[in-house]
Length: 68
Image (cartoon, rainbow, N blue to C red; front, side):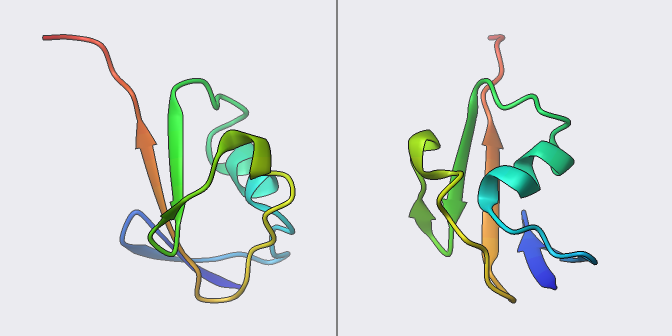
């Protein structure tokens, strides 16, 4: 499956079934302080498991950082 993550095309085989599965792989389970948009729509963390990915989806991952 082809997905665009943070403006980079990525290929997955096998394809992740859900947004939560993709994030588990991509972020090594570290989802604290993460915001996700799927096709320009923010996906609340409560919906990550139920959100099914489709080929050519565009995913934006934003990580909160500290500093000043």
